[in-house]
Image (cartoon, rainbow, N blue to C red):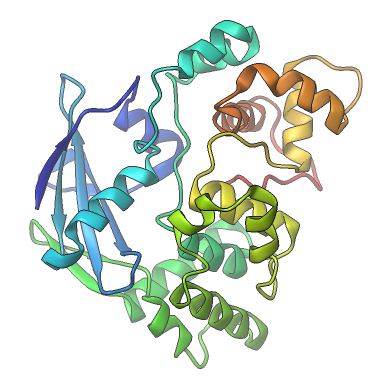
Length: 300
């Protein structure tokens, strides 16, 4: 299925890929990125190619079963935060010069999400107490060993395993018994509908976080990551050390801000508080690094 999409608001696909995605591209067309993922509903996997034309249009194609093509298209666009109208995003920067400067610096970057809350949850479980590189390698090997193989323009891409396949996993190199058991719970929750993007977005935030924390191994930190960068909330702020640190540095505060101060500062970010938070995370990582003991639940 081929499709075209006109972004609402400023959007630069190459810029998104530079800061977040790291997606593979087509050998015969390096400007075209390729996403491969299990499609929510779990009836199959798809690969979606995306390219931005000079007039700003996104031109894409879905490779996969016809019955899941529309869902795959929607999922790929949501991954790039293109399912959200960004017409008013620049207004946040006009109200708050700190965010405005970062918007210009990073070319009005939008958050990039995991392909689904399911993949987000699996990624957090696999990556717990591991270097990012190790997590990426294990997820890559799981995709190659258990995921569906998709061919695009003669190139082979692998989707992360379907929940049913992850649920049947007895053991895996690099994963201890506890992590395998926790991945079983993630897979079962996905099959039961708990880790569905639309479902999580439909819940009040506190309820969604409470539901996610019922998964073994998912505490407040991982629950925020799954909800904000798996489901893709737009107007909320993660409660984590890196957010506090980024606000302190960017607003030149003498002390780490308490929640009341964060709420006061972030009023002008509405209705894009998460987008502003992500910009602050990117900035502080590049300007100051991440001090020991600080981490961000919104990190993709």
